[in-house]
Image (cartoon, rainbow, N blue to C red; front, top):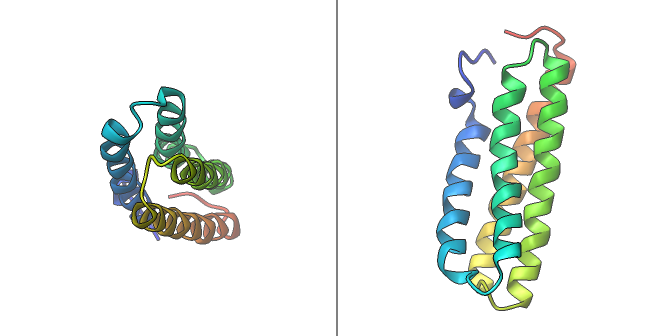
Length: 123
């Protein structure tokens, strides 16, 4: 797997779509809870930014650390989805869709991180 830019990485592309979806949902449905909206947006953006920043590091080991951070932020998003569901900010259908997407991203990150750790040379 040789990528010339982080924009080529499939998990980055998936995460970009995920972030856009979160921004659309939180724009209207989280108006009563700015703190939770902000936390969810920051966690989702953190996934995207960690992939991007890790790509620019010199080694795959460094990149893998950023991928691990991104994976943690994916879990944070999932936890916020439960709070949002419990407080009526999202529907069960939205919850299921968002959790499924977050789990998919987390799996992609896990596989990519394992690949990076196993391959010691970047680019």
